[in-house]
Amino acid sequence: MTTPSLQGIRVLIVEDNYVVAEALKYVIDGYQGSQSTIVPNLARAFEVLAASRVDIAVLDINLNGTSVVPLADHLHAQGIPFVFLTGYGDDDVLPPHLRGQPLFEKPVEAERLVRAIVEALGRS
Image (tube, rainbow, N blue to C red; front, top):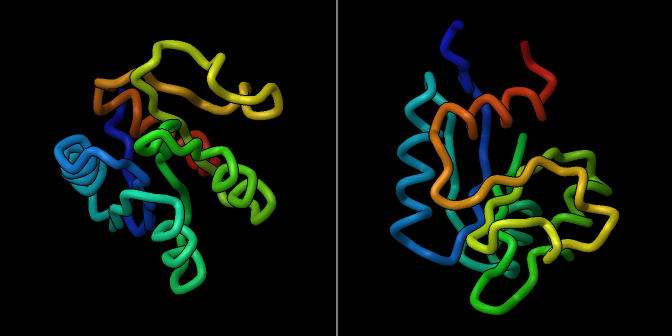
């Protein structure tokens, strides 16, 4: 099996835990030159989306008690793919219309996450 590549991909990481966010950035950026931006909350995520191109987002479902659903709905409307991360173990925290999105429990194995990102982007 070949190693997946994220070369040239701009990834928005929406994660409120700094250590987790930095670990995700390290993993994602290590797959052949992707560029990741970390934001800890919805307001910053919307600012980044307004100011720059994002190819895909990695979304923590719960940001210090705030649901990421409004951002996921916005990304979906804009045609920007995303994957969810959760510490809760299942997708019951998501509304039904988002339950088909890729969802990973923290901590996630790096290559599984990267493969899901590649798949969501429609890359082979």
